[in-house]
Image (cartoon, rainbow, N blue to C red; front, side, top):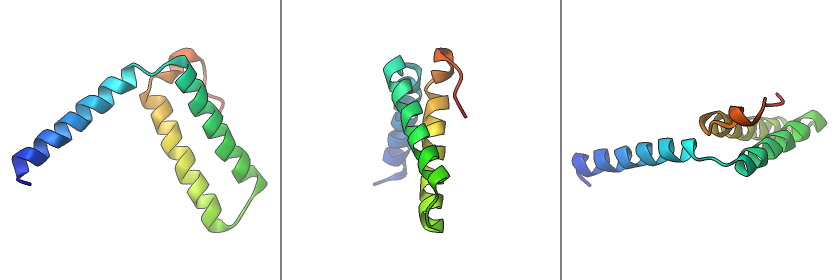
Length: 79
């Protein structure tokens, strides 16, 4: 794969990602909130250090999707 093909592929991914962020539905935002709460609940219950770190990282990814998706317009996040 040459550098032009790689640059084009990255551009398409960035464009697709930014476009999809603007079209996130209320139900998808609610689903993300539920998933975030699920990982928060798991962490509150406790676990091994590696589990806690995995749950923390997964929650962080979901929070980022929530923010990028424009979900704030549907109400405040609970964290």
